[in-house]
Length: 481
Image (cartoon, rainbow, N blue to C red; front, side):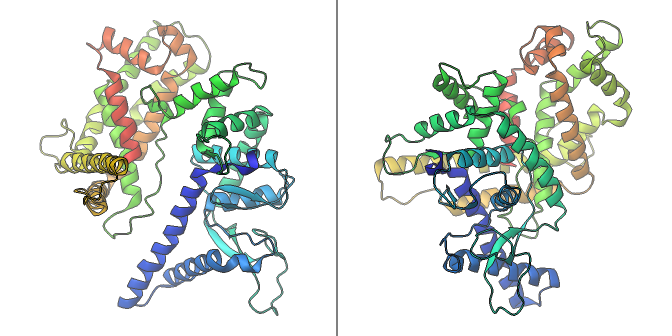
């Protein structure tokens, strides 16, 4: 039953959100020992303390005895689902990933809620931050529109900051994904049940089956693209096939499936690390790999063929994209400018001879990747053998390698390089869309953009590189940064 499934990524997101408040309190209390806090810092400290107190003690103030949560995505989704009456039963919270409603027999509500959350996660929709508001009676997550000022210590609940600029954007994206989720119909419930079976290796025992909202959403989109309906006779096989694609079982990473909008580094609070600068370097990694694969040159060659009338493309979306790409050429970076920024930020050879080069990046990158790999491998072996021997690679060593790398990327992501990375990210996304256009794929008899790149590079640019290696580097680069 969907109402008894444990959604693992909800637990992970809640842990990260809770830790962020713990770290905020710890950091600002240390600052307070040295100097007085600013108004904004004082407000942030008070809010984080109050949220942690509400999570620890708030369930005693509610008749439903439900424990509060502080993950902004879940809190904002809960508010919109309840206040817009999109589900019959009221969504209260989740207990260790199991959705909690105010009534029984909530399979359809649990299916819709988990799918909406998964789609929002997949699309990297940024929710507004949370705050504390007066609670309506005993309803978890419900705001009291007319709080009584005479009541001492009124109950409070965690609620989205509706005055935040991100609230409006999230609301529009939320209704978009709700429409998509409802469009899947009864297929969503069948797929969730099959994923629950896969997530319960011990059979239908007392422990809740484990599913990830994000994987649920990705599987649903892949099934929709493959035109698989609720009447599919071999639905379980198709679901497992799509799940293998989502988890990259037996297949290469696909750059088109990897989001270039990277997650925030909320866990790092050092003054010399700027999260935005580190995040921006993911686009630089992808750009450098695209240079190696000659992707930019391939697009230029295709545009030139289209300009000369050598491509059988008529009026349509593909033609408009190619024409727009040609018209915007003077406003884009040249190849040498891209190589200069790659040299400045990542130390990739090919920049100006007298320019700045990030010579430390490669060593820091290899040290971080190898330390994480060694630590994971060592942890798996220790768990298998139940070894009591001390570990040669510790959490502290891995954390230091990560922070050294983040500091280096933050340092070289300042100034113009930060804005250049944003432009390159937009350029890369446009290229992925252009090369994946069905009409362009048909011109070259290709199944995906990489076959187009290989063909054009082979016939017009002096040879193609092995794309799988550089695609993997690009995908992993975006994830790591």
